[in-house]
Length: 232
Image 1 (cartoon, helix red, strand yellow):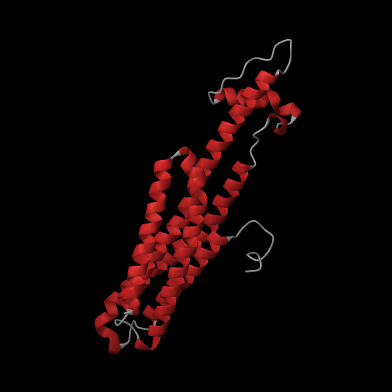
Image 2 (cartoon, helix red, strand yellow; image 1 turned 90 degrees about the vertical axis):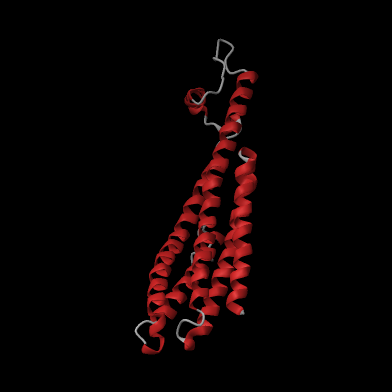
């Protein structure tokens, strides 16, 4: 928590979303653990054992989501830090950068006796800009996929919470509600991280950005339905 509140770039909102949902998954495990082995709930023994196992897997995935978000953000930061102007290139790196850009299919004229011309600098800047934009779009996909996975895992855990209502230790029914709210919050918080990366993705692949946005919206919609089932 100290690191979350520090000036460090990570962890951030995406990691907080994963952690919030992880608490919900852990609470589901707690409810199942306090139901398994009790004669009063023998008819729900198998269900609670299954839920316990599934929730444990989801908890692990959600905890991984904390690191996945931080890793994805780091790659996004690196992409945004790529040079986009000729002046961004260190003078002793110009030749190497021209060679790299040519290897990626960019057309850069040869430097002749006139030296570095404005035309060549413009060619380099155009190539740098295209590379930078492509890199940002690529890593933004990863940065959107990480919280989208958190949303998917959270919804799966929320369904488990719904399956336990009325089929688990009645003394812990309030914990099911708390778990549901943690998962609901995690889903909604993760959706902001998904949305934040969609503009960069849309520049390179509008269809993919639209697909991701719709997938997130569908998860939020189903979340509301499951929450109402638990409350009902």
